[in-house]
Length: 131
Image (cartoon, rainbow, N blue to C red; front, side, top):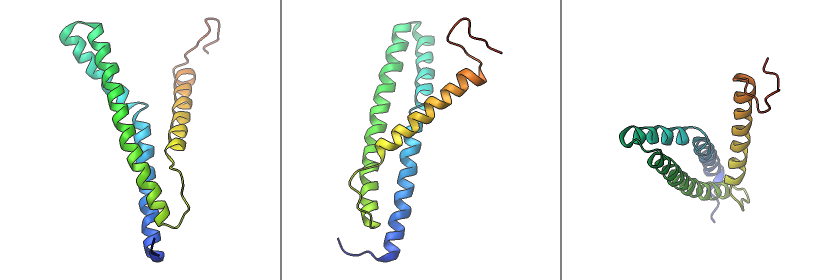
């Protein structure tokens, strides 16, 4: 690989940072907007058909198809991220997608816990205080 010079390495670093941000946004989409969109679509199917089965099939099938598509796109972005990191002068062997997914899942779980237990004062055990 020819030496790109400091300017090329800086541009590759900036571009790799942008791709990493896209990965983070893509993983966050799978926690709230995509499921909510499919629940909304499923509700419209239920309104038209009156069938909870059709609603469930549309929601589950659409959600799975969308998540598979998003993960394929994120995998491509991750491969491009690795290439840009190498151009920036780093010995990048693996992508960051696994770490980004784990981080977004962690924040998603923490966010759900805060929403359920603190904001909505939900409880799991019937005798648990809700004050």
